[in-house]
Image (cartoon, rainbow, N blue to C red; front, side, top):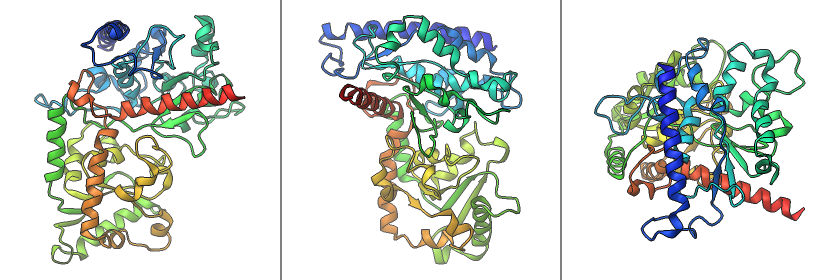
Length: 449
C-alpha cells in the first residue's frame, strides 16, 4: 500500500511541477494570467531537482518505525490525510510530521517559480528531513545521527554545484517538520544523545530552515505553524467556518486539551488539572455566566492527534484555551485554538511569542492572547481563573475578534484551492514571504561585507 501511495504521489507531484513551471514561465507573455513578471520581482523561487531518495522514497518507510508511529494512513491527499468523514470538504486527519509533503505540494502552485536558478531569489530544497531523521531517532542508524543531511550536501556539491556555490547556500531554504531541538545534537557527543546533528553541521549553517519550533537562540531556523486539520478548498468553505466561529456560544470559560499533569511532581499541567477540578465543584453559572468553568479534553496517549472532532467542538464552545508546555514549549493546539476562535493562554514566552514572529506579530500578542507566567501558578498560588475572570467581557470580545482575524495566517489551505481563497494569505504564503525576506536580508548583508 505504501509503495502504491508513493508511486501515485510521485506521478502527481512531477506532473504538477512541470505544469506549474511551464505556466509560470509563460505568464509574462499572456494578459489573462493574474501573475505578471512585475508581481514576481524579487520573488522568484527555483525548486531544486532532488533524487526521490531525498523525499518521496522516504514515504515508503512510513510503517517501519513502530516505536514512533505508522504514518502511512496520513499520506493521502498529499499529506493532508484522510477526510474526517466522507462529506467533509475542509477537515482532514492531518499528521504534523507531513508538513514537508504539504509544503512540497503547495510550493508547486507558487505563482513565481522559475526553471532558471540564475534568476531565482531563493532556492527551495524539497528534502523531507524530519522523515529522513526517523531512522536516526527510532531506527537502525541511531549511532550515526551525525550523518543526517550529509548525503544531501554531497549531492548539492556534485550535481550542478554552481547552484549552491552561487551564494554558498545563503539563498537556499527547506522545511523540517519536527522541533529544531531534534536536530541540534553536538557533533562531538560520544556516545550520541537524543537527536541528529543536522542543524549543527557547518555545511548547512547558511541555509534557512523552517521548523514548527525553533530554539531559544536560533541560528538558521524560523518557526512556522504546525498544520491543523482545517484545509478549506475555497472561499465559501472558509467563510462558512468563520461565521460558525463567530456565532458559536462560548459556554465554557477555559479549556485544556491534552494529557499529562497526573503525576506528583509540581508542574503547570498538574496545576491546571487541580484548578479545573476545584473550580467546577465550587463555581456556578449564577456567579460566572458560564455553564462550565473549565473543560478538560483528555488527549492522553495521542488519542486526539488524528481526530479533530474530539477537541474542535469543545474549543468552539470555550472562551480561553490553555496552552501549557509539554515535552517542548510549543503545541499544535495553539493553532487549533486560534482556528476555533478560542483565545490562547500561554505560560511561557517560548510557547509562541518568541517563535512565530512571521505569523503572529510579537507586538500584537496582548490583543489576541493572555500570558500568565507558569512559575506564578505552580509555585506562588496564582489562580488562572482569577486572571481570566478579571478580564472585562468587552475586552474578551475584542480579543476574540483579533483571534479570528489571525485564522487565515495560521491555516494551510488545501492545494488546488479556488482563486478567491488564494487572495487570503495563509500559513504557507506567510512562510514564503518570511523566507524570501530573510534570504534577501542575508544576501544584502553579504554584499556589504
